[in-house]
Length: 480
Ligand code: ADP
Image (cartoon, rainbow, N blue to C red; front, top):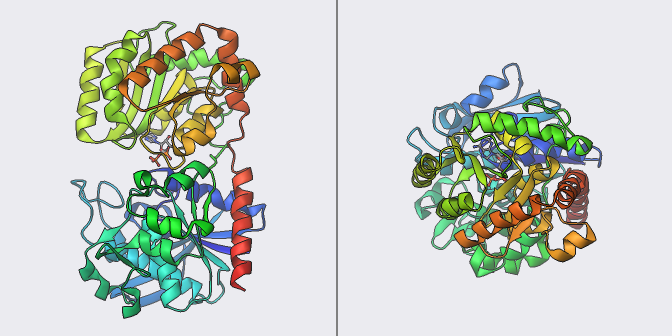
């Protein structure tokens, strides 16, 4: 079965979040389930730099008015098609989607309409020796893929995965005429979304099946609180909506072979984590002592509850915990947290920025990993934490609720706890959780059991890869 995965990010080429990890992991995870996956990615400047030497497999002078070229290459064993369209993608910016000042590019609609149109054209057979059996589109940037397949009359079925419903690709109605769609596409059953054009909405409407990245989030998005305007549509399509939890790359995230940490370890040598903790204390200018270190690796945003965390810092420190935070994002939150860190020298260290090495060190050296998201489609940080014996402390929402077993009395007695869940998200609840961590750590046997349970948890792609493969098969079958 040949599947074309269409993703605006993919590790190791380009990453701003979990989507890149998923798109990068799916090809090899699915290979053993009979799926040959090829991934279409935009030829951003940083991508072009990494794939020099690919083979040009198609050239088109005019896709929605833009000249494009498709380059076929292999990236660490993954089949990749790069959409080289210099006018759209070969430019500088602070991210693939934003200019140097952090503002969305004005032509994002055109960039990702062309990206989606080309994916649909591949489905339609423009390449000599490659026609996919199914197209798998990710997020709003590929949201128009199912719509183009449908309105271009391509018989190839599609799956769309929502990694985060907060990003919807909503653009003024004026662009509709530039999208090369028939008039029939303008309407509630097509691409129209509250009077605008909605790229994600278009994909959710037209795809053969919809997935999101955890069972709980798949239920939550059907409610007004989490649906972000799309709950009506998602309820109408509930029969075609599935929740498939993400895995992590267990080779890249492996404490027993991790080259980015101070000392490797496994579940039998947990004491060696102490060496990583010392390295973490040095890196984040923390006191050297035995109090718990709570780590955080995240975008510093409202979604991630980082404003609430900023409110809770004084209480967490008073509870006897230290904090090591790595992240970047909202300037207000960055400055609130930096100020709190100056107030608590030795107890709270912060590194503003994106830093792969520091993220590994936090996972390997912190005692607990705090993930207090307001909503969380899946969350990868807590999965990595489980694997590293870094006890996750999570909000009870989305994928966080699905992957962490709270250390309540029953779960501790049964020996199945893997972390701590917050009942509600508030500064008080976070301080309360800090007290719980202190209390649990005072009982070394209980603590170690929680760590080991986490390390035993299957956070690989194995189960989920099978679910995707099964879904692809049933969707292809239904189309026949
Ligand atoms: P999201 O995709 O919403 O940002 P996820 O938890 O799904 O959240 O994925 C985030 C990924 O990015 C994880 O692999 C996490 O380790 C990584 N990450 C987030 N912020 C940073 C940072 N500042 N430095 C290094 N890695 C980070």
